[in-house]
Amino acid sequence: RTSTVDRLVSLRGTVTKARPKRLRVLDSGFVCTKCGLHQISKFMDGKYSSPTKCEDMKCRSQKFVLNRKVANFCDVQELKIQEVREECCEDIDGENGDGVDGGENREAGRAPRHMEVEVVNDLVDMCHAGDSIVVVGIVR
Image 1 (cartoon, rainbow, N blue to C red):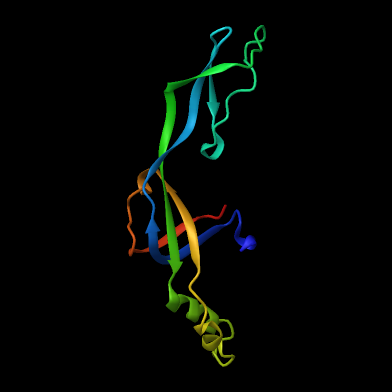
Image 2: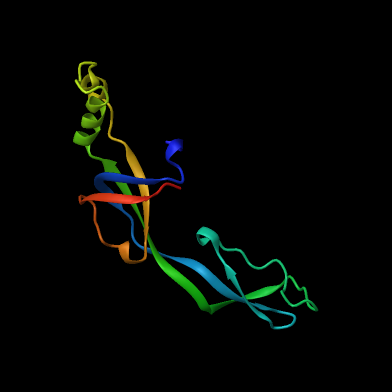
């Protein structure tokens, strides 16, 4: 839901898919081809972008060579989580307290919802498909 974006949420569910871990580049060094100045460029969300111009006031070149030796990486893994069915029905019934409105019937034919979750660093490879987990994080 859009109302949960940028909010801290807790989700209980079952891991249906755990993709293999991969590396995400956090930042890397670049060398100006004209003056040789070294500069670090941060990558937002792992998206590669080279510097637009040299930081040296006298140079201002726009050509750079990537220096992989000074790059910083982190492990990333994507998980697909399926909601726990019992909790879903309890939440629906709990809205009016007596369950008279047929909340169970309304939700009986609905497929369980899924959510993609991204884990980083020490949380990578901590769970596998079939594990029941509770995820606490900020929705992006």
